[in-house]
Length: 217
Image (cartoon, rainbow, N blue to C red):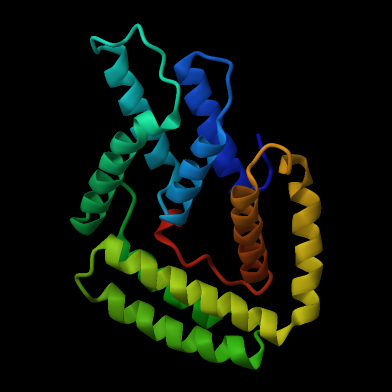
């Protein structure tokens, strides 16, 4: 299993799909791109695997079960259905162990506790924490909250890079070293996203900042 959390997401999907399909063939470039889409949409790994499992279970009991599932695209509709059930459960407070309002409040508290921030990141952390508390008190759906979180995280990462370009360069070299084993396994666009996600995580973690995404809820 990949040690980098971002690479592990892609590898876990591939391993689960291949094992359930019962075929030694690995993912195609189109399949990798679909996993990239799910990751960019912020769909947690467990939800993606649930959707894939549902699709392949249904196929195993269908009239066409003798035909091999040749592409991950076969599971796309069930993954989306699993995502919609997850988002609905979050909105209604029915997802086990998940509390959307409490999660957003926790992110705001974490931003307030962050240390060693430069001027640009410090100002942005304060305003983002305020925005998080406003959304925690609202009735916004997860699908409305996630794009806002993603935009704020992108701004915060840009501010961290601005405040300390030397550290950002150092982390980029670390990421490139750790992802080198996957360079031949993934299409360039997918590897680029994995690299960017890994760099974001490391920049935020180095300052005690959380990832701003429901993906981690």
